[in-house]
Image (tube, rainbow, N blue to C red; front, side):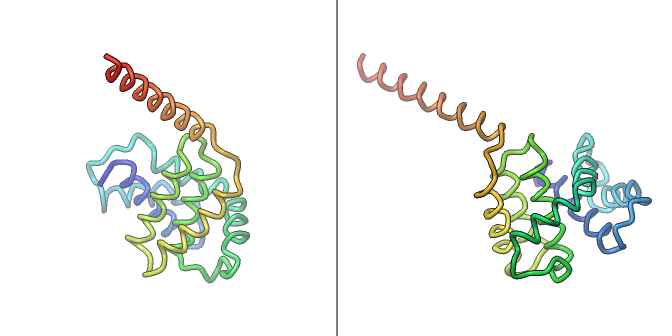
Length: 166
């Protein structure tokens, strides 16, 4: 399991426990430490899990409004605890974390939903996050990545043209 994927999984498990236990933040450090101890005792993520968890909790009201708006058929309290927290994590990375490319946020959330949710969780998460993505402005990191990819493609085409000309 890739490091960032493992970190996101630990963050989702922490958010699940936080949500399941009444969204109390007084034992957040213990929840995070407990998940590391139980699922990844020798893993050092340089604070990525904690940043994700605290970021979601800091923005949870706004994040929940996105979920309510885009999961129109499902009242927030009727979405399973797993799916709700996968969505919270995905919305946080998609909308609030400018360092994560949008497609990475969506794909990672889908994979976590498939691993921990029900049969339709991956499709549900994909639908909600995909709808948000379609309506949001492009993230700077995505614009930068697309420009770099276009430059590399242009460079490769130019090199290929030069090689065929010789």
